[in-house]
Image (cartoon, rainbow, N blue to C red; front, top):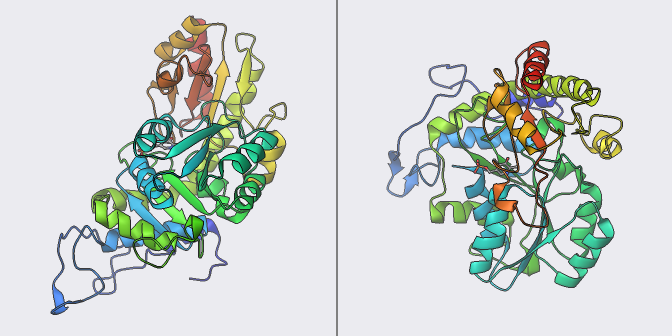
Length: 397
Ligand SMILES: *Cc1c(COP(=O)(O)O)cnc(C)c1O
């Protein structure tokens, strides 16, 4: 498969060849926990035990690595287990890890509660202020900088190429959680990042029926501080594979098969969701009940220029502010098509109140989310029906 094929073609063909024996057009689902050996100690096709490796998982990983333009991808049973394994590979007791202060709530909990209990120092940064980032990186000398862009739930856009340069300047690796954009809209490795993570629970699965995660490593990325790691090779890709098997953080082949299926329609889904999100953002911007719309596809948004440079389209999630907290909560209770639920990226449109739902753990902190904010994840319903649904909810108070 030539690397010159475009992303949508690779999503369908790389790692997804027809079965060589029976001719199945899609790779069959391999559920076996163990594999018959060719000879003592010699596996038939590289697989011996289902935790250590599985052909259905390998197929997905090959496709995913191709889409993110990385050297290797590793599928995990959830986004957080992917992040946890990666953070343990990159950092040791005594190291520090820097992160954008508005990262996903579960990532924030890992970074501020779990890792510090094991002797890592973690430091939150305002990624919009590159001078502050440079200063803190120089002062703290972290092993990694963890970035999410666009941010959640305020959809701020951060400059990946500049952040990569600043991180590399102090010997830190840049890790980007690319869940909101997916490889269709943004490819951080091409902008200088070293590692990409995803919650595949969101756009990759895309149908609200599988929890999963992935880590993708760029070519030749080495451990910080010239460490050699458990494998003695110093290569991040080898270390992630080693630790994943050592701690058993491996996904069900059935889940991974759903993710491979999701990848095949990812581009058409997310482009359509992005177009609908832009139409909804433009509609909301004109409405007097809406105080502010946060969506980098709007020319008036502070992230517009940067998003245009580093993303193919700003994506299917947006947030907006209404008069007060009561109205924000009522809106989600009064929609019929938008389901009142956390999560994002699926074919169904979702609506939520971040201050009390996804970002409740941040209340009282410096990064507290405004109580009058509403976040929506735009699905694949007709955009006119979605706008009518929001209008009915506004009218209901
Ligand atoms: C959902 C999410 C995660 C966590 O993934 P899980 O699959 O729920 O473990 C991490 N990062 C972002 C941006 C997310 O939206």
